[in-house]
Length: 632
Image (cartoon, rainbow, N blue to C red; front, side):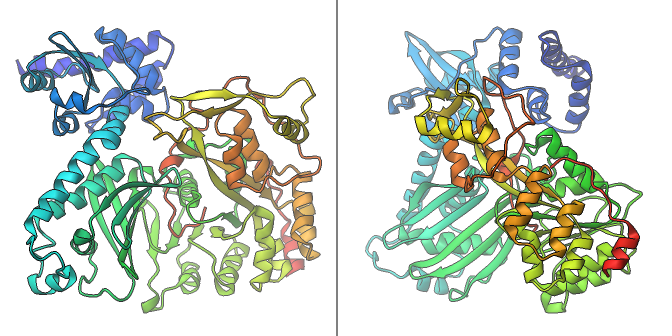
């Protein structure tokens, strides 16, 4: 009996895989890789195949529909009404991950992520008193609808109501902060407050948020999530619950709950939905109370692989060329939150090998990488970027990663390390790649050292991707047509189609779902190096870099527009879309239709700490040693 039950899941998995192979969606090798990856985890085969990028969610849904004979339903136009609660209560929807669709006669049609789960169907039958007709739907679509329209409001309203009931109704004007000093942890550990904080955190994780903001105002406490780079207001909390909620988070992240007058930083770890997560927590006193910001760091997304960063082929080749260099400084630039950390971790993951010694200095170490020696800044003990970097040179390193170059001393040590035969990766805060050269000179580094040591610079931004559920074509305006023709060199009778998301439940009505990268990759060629030696301006360096093959951030963004990955408005939001003379795109066969899952990857879950932020396409020409010695 035990053997039979163990065999059944295996046959189910094999059957799904065989269907996908017969449909030409995946290969036998990809199936084998997915089954190997699945070992030791509780994830279903379909989820694994999608995670590895072998197929899309719709491919899995259609295969499951064929396998089970249960109809697949899209929830993009799903409308939730309170009348549906008469059949299935919100807590059951959230617990079993189901949604009531409609009721006809004595039959209740229910969208389920796993329509073969007999136990769930039986529970729903007993709860509703009706026959259950299951329908297949994407789990993330069900979760998103429950979170937006059902579960969140139900759960948080109930928890807030429960806590308010515990307060003395006659003491409406009581100062909670004073009460906490007397009551100790009683208010903080009150059941509803604990569950409210857990709900806020878990829902943020399920929504793929990168940050949680808890912001006090005059008459409410606003909770916002940053999703795909944009903040969304999720709920508001009564002021009476503000201090217990903040104190609960401060306890979890090892802060001093008695200190309310100065900023504090803390960290905590948790496993939510099978994902190992770290939270970097910041507490800031404001005029209305303490504001909390929690950065969510997902360890499973630290190294997504270079193939999943949204890079074009020539951009990926540029990074491989930089990583193959035996020495030199390679910089990644861009603002906070533009994916620099994920890019650098992915490069290190590519280079990680038992034959090389890789050392990093980070502030702080956000993800631990097996096989790599990681050092965390400790300024109180005298361990800063500069001192750590100089110590690294006595550790026989091959590759060094410096989290951020902030001052001349760190820059000088990085240049010194590169000129003594080490490959150095680091970050710098500049608006584009050519500006990094001028920035290094302004920091005090001599031109000849910058020219001799720097091998490449990569600038990066993140753009939101059009929601694949509600994507639709949009007409050109005369202004837009003229711009596209001028920038891309199209004839008057041809321009590629443009697309946008009209807004649906899955994308919260924004028309966007997930993010991908746009890149500006500058190789320090002999001509660029000569301009650096001549103390040329940023514009002169930019013009030469473009002449030698660099594609600007603006053209990279427009390329994503022409491929149906993002919108022209989004491209304008994150770039200046400045006009480069003679700049055209020749690396693409521009598609008439949008690519399915184009530019996909895990950039929508990027987090960026102090490893500051992406590259281009020709093989690096190494400067002869004698020329370097001459420059020095």
